[in-house]
Length: 324
Image (cartoon, rainbow, N blue to C red):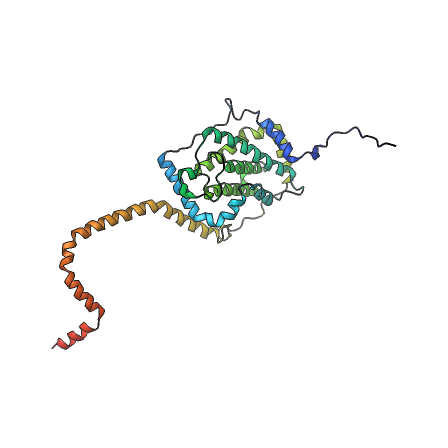
């Protein structure tokens, strides 16, 4: 007897791939008018004047010298797998917090979409094009610099996490999310592939994208509600003493802040110190030229003094013999 076919079914909603579900939301987001019309997102052009670029490059050199060595491993890992840092911090995966995981996926794809739009529109050069001596730690991405895609994506994730709590950005988990987003964004500057203004533009773009468009979409509202349920009951337990809490770089937070402040001050004052030293050298050269004649007159006295210095005890013995 042949096997019977089965009927009366639809494809299960929970059998959809999360990545594909996110693409459906992204398709609807593309039709919201975020990129055209009166309500479109606006991103100002960067300041690429000589003075502004000089300051930006100066900051990148200081960050490279102060931070690149001890952040190198995470910088390399975050080139193509920054989501892993969020999965680890938010305890996602293996069926845990699936709605939150979808939010992360949505933020990554929507953030990339809006960032690439403005990158192509503005076409800003990468830092290594302005100062090849920066020698980026990772390969320079094959697209324009402004705004930072990583900063857009990471800030969009952190903004969505904050939206899961009644306290918003003041919630303890939201603060952790904001700190991670800032660190990953900053790492792109330390790596030498983004200017600080790229980062700031990406951060603002993320907030405009969420508050202006994503959070008003019915699909995103439903996803936020599901993710909010996954975090119900999570409260702030206690706040440790910030002066003794070790930070991610080693040492206490206070010692790290002091050392970073000193390094930043030295980096900021370095151009003035160099200029002062050069001026001092030129003044010394002119003084030495004017005093050359007097120096030649005192050569013989200097020679005799030098001989006495070689035998410091002998003059005192001679003086003692000559005294009455």
